[in-house]
Image 1 (cartoon, rainbow over the protein chains, first blue to last red):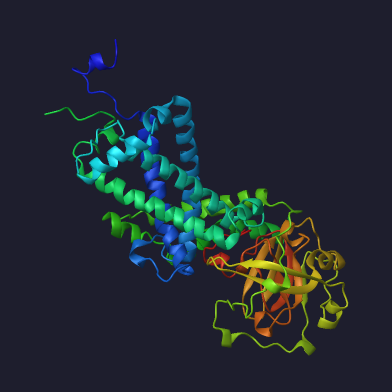
Image 2 (image 1 turned 135 degrees about the horizontal axis):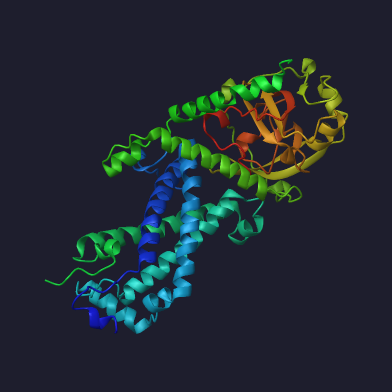
Length: 208
Length: 246
């Protein structure tokens, strides 16, 4: 019996359990990493601004560092589990590929007109690009984080990113890319009907 | 049974650790910001605090394992040295102690065979080396500086320090203190620095450790001691990660 055949009785699973669990663990980890990271940034701002203290985590620098270096293990271990699952199960290949220039152009045009299809569990070209992009940004943020944390022990990595001071900027801009993604991701998840609950239950809402 | 110092210490250890956790909590490691955002009150602050404290100790062990005793910090050219070098301490620049080098004595204690104190002249009579390395502050900024002095390993061997002990502690004239692991103390670039650009950076003696964050590089050193009990330090006791290696 095919999955489609059972559609009438049971809504189809649009997000596998593994993806849902790692998604929400990641949500907690990235939330802690960003907010504590903003507090760490404020201790020595790279650019001419600081993050509002009310939107940071840790209370002061030592607290923020404690949060940051505790949550990093959650982020990394959970991220590795997600990547291993995505690559081995075929989830990445099925969900993120193919991705073509023409498809992107078409979907971007549709998105501008507000007519882009946003079905749970089936990603349009813009979504595919965004998800691949945020995974790459996560790679950069983790690698540059290691380069800042261990500029002596991992000095080859730090040098690859252009040295300690350049690695700080890599870390900042990778964070900024992730935050930009999150603004889009969360606002769409909250505004488009019927796509948030499948990320919890795994099943598409029954059509009414 | 004769009471020994060791038994006394271990009996107090759980209490000391509890006190340290309390202090950690009081220093503002609060969930205020998070509960503000999430709109819920997280009453279990102490459990979160304990978890963060445990993770920080776990990160100490990870960093000790990651530390390669023969991996050298990158060095730079004289042209890259930052002047003026940023001043950083827990107090304002004008409050930096002024020490008379003529009657200065470096005190030694703990697991050291020869506890005689050292004058600056005696320290200068030891072989000196120079380094240009990057100092990375826990706040994030960094600056390349030049330091000259006695390789710390040679000094420790010279005074008969027990190099199998776990920690080296440092007490400073500015009421600052810190401590490092023995592996780092014996690293070829760890330097008992006598020469640096200005007295405010720690005259007459500081420890320059390019494999550690800036706050693990004590200035205005008054006393050095070798011990198996982790002595903590000024910032470490307030909640900063103890190992803080680069």
